[in-house]
Image (cartoon, rainbow, N blue to C red; front, side):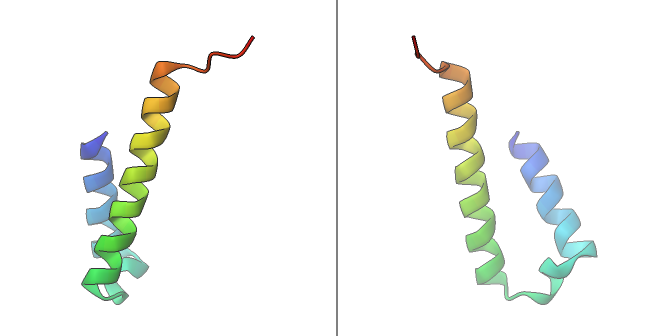
Length: 51
């Protein structure tokens, strides 16, 4: 999963609007997205215990 995030970030730098944003803003946004994906992954992995 980390590889996918890194690949998308690299593609964004090379091809997209991320190339026009300041590096600190890009890194902050990347960290926020990676955190959200990690939380989503953990929640899906552990499953929802609803009855």
